[in-house]
Image (cartoon, rainbow, N blue to C red; front, side):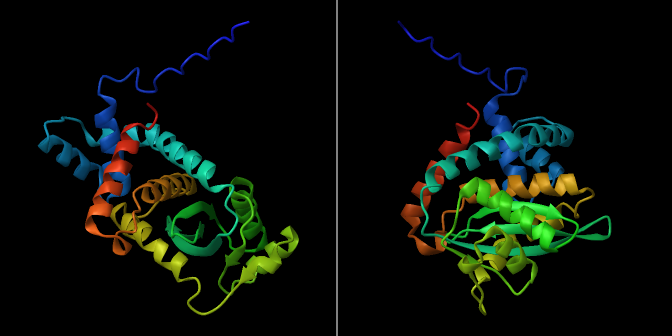
Length: 240
């Protein structure tokens, strides 16, 4: 008996007059580079693409999460079976309407952001939710590097992985340095107005940054160009 072939899901671009290639490049320019919506509009206009900044906003809101989810799904599939890795956990403060919130971030041994999570506090409960979310998606890590915040050992003790925790001077520099691209982007956006907007953008920004993070300071020029071309080719196939 022949199996019925699964129907191909409909294209997410089917109701749009603009080509998927233009939508992808507009979303990439806004999320990856420290550009405003109007900057993206002007750059597209120089290449003969006449769209408004509100159109760019709509595209990134509609397709940004879709592209980021595709990137994350591929990375998790490749890395989930690898256990000999080290996580770096850190929290950074972010202002929302003048009120301090905390953006928790987990970074792997390669400097790529695994998870971003926004909370109003940085107590044990917030650390526990953040760790559970990361562990559920990526599995266990061999070592987890944290700073001196007491919420980490309290949460890890409850999860039963306190033995994995290590702490020391300069050990968490990888997490500290991973904040820099997001800080540059935050200044261009003139900060955030809602927790939901911060959570959405930080997650999408991290996945797109991971996708194009080629560690160019560790490789020669030719290798970098090859990896950059491969990353762009993969980007053009997202949600295809």
